[in-house]
Image (tube, rainbow, N blue to C red):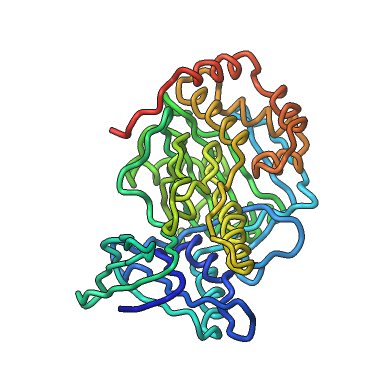
Length: 396
């Protein structure tokens, strides 16, 4: 039986970020012992992916940043472009492999942290509150662990009850072009010059890394993912006919699905076993951004450990932000607001730095109201009134 102060389940952004922030250096006090459990290579291991976020000034993980941009752009479905500087922020891109390499390099120098590749089967609590974690390693051998606290980043087996459920699903190509077609100073956040689906919305997303190379994604907010062939057809149309790139070399691909829901993912009654990351509510329901909220959540946990307090993860988004997201999701899902027009108007009418702080949930009430009046007010108020009476229902 392996004993430690903390067990972290999952070696993705949340698990690695928490391990990186916890005080495990024996030269400092307090220092805790940590076991990070990640799935062995195989279907349970998450594929490579890209995380994006905005940040003012130097950041903790700048050594892993692939590229960053000081300008963001949104294209309407009619081709009108709105280009904005986002100072004091920069929009940053980190690829998961680079992030893992940075964190693992730093953790290798800390003696009180262990890494275990195993599949967790069960997490249980003893009467005294001690958590027991049972897992199976790559050879099939059973491994048992005990800990004062467990932080679990795996998605729940069954999605919790919600009023609205959409998916942000996407496929991206890392492309190389023959001629210089990209502007490496500008990231295209939403390009609505894509064929719009019958339900939800679609857009292109372009993160240039040079004049000749970029990550180009096709994204939909909708009820269900597409087939690989359908994604590739959409990307082919977007790169050739919208971006006018000419022939491209596809050097790598990535694909993902992000739940967009108003379900309550945090558990206020948990005592020693906690959900973190996307499983702990870090995904912003109206946008799908997760990485920045993971950093706030894991830093709060680490700060509590350093202070000797119970490390209960705080809700990563304020209640007011979650309520506004619920309204937006419902209005998008039932078609009460036009998605492309809604996001284009926000980006056009709200100062970029304020909008980014709003999307991070860091604005004050008067700033939220100033953003709100630049949306379709009547449909949003009608939707908000409906939500008061609409029950959350279990997932089918």
